[in-house]
Image 1 (cartoon, rainbow, N blue to C red):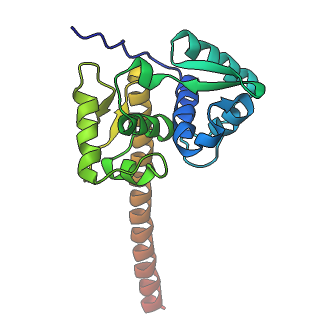
Image 2: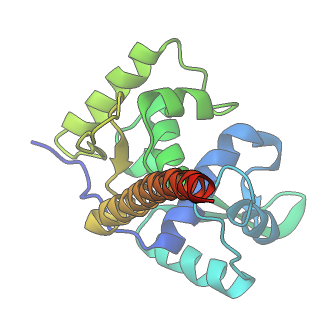
Image 3: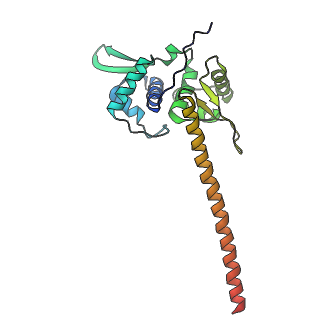
Length: 215
């Protein structure tokens, strides 16, 4: 019998907080679990984040509260410090290994990515042995009884498939589709504009030549 907990549908704020805790647990273990100030800074980083946000303390606090109710975050107190700290419980609630947590984390923090991008962006979180390992992990996450990721349909001109996490439900997929459509539309418009400008330049040259001959 499958006893894996059902995957929750997280808000954008919950995704950012959870992803930031996952990341810092691997990249800065000496400062993990994180204080509230540390978590605010992690969420609002200007690099390795899509989109870049500017959450205040109250936003993070309310988000932590909702994640605690889902069992995905817990507090840590005691020891030499009286400051409350926070850690994620994703790998406790769900049967995932560190390499899989890294992939989910990167998708939470940076949006949809290809296997190659995930391999490049893993940085200090996890050192994958090869691109084949990344693809194998993605296949496992996508084909599990409780899927964690989904492969997006390839678009014309795309060499690698992109993957998106399923913690945001259809909203995260829709946002990725919208991002692609905006980028695609902008690129198509720029191409058409360049073509029109070239045609205008050719017509102007022909007009100047004709006027020169007439004079």
